[in-house]
Length: 68
Image (cartoon, rainbow, N blue to C red; front, side):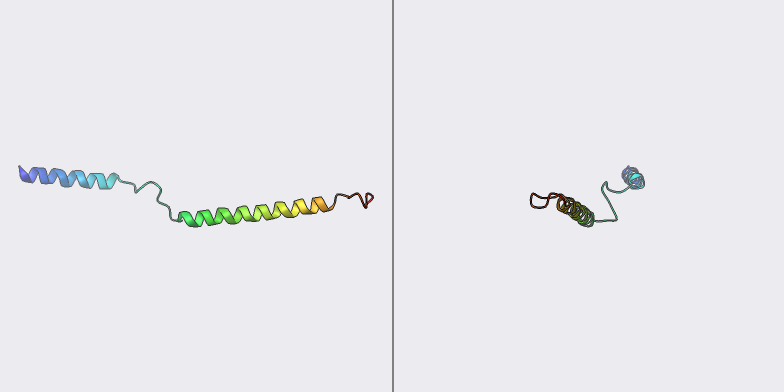
């Protein structure tokens, strides 16, 4: 009876290993790299928006030169 229990455990374990697709959340790219990329893109977008806003604000005439 002991050999049947052993074989049952071995077969059940092997089937469970074959069904296992890996842990959820496994990624070839670490989370730190993804966060760094997102921060870099956000910095670039913020810089472009700031540049455009500064150009737009400098094109508005002020009270000393209203005909600019």
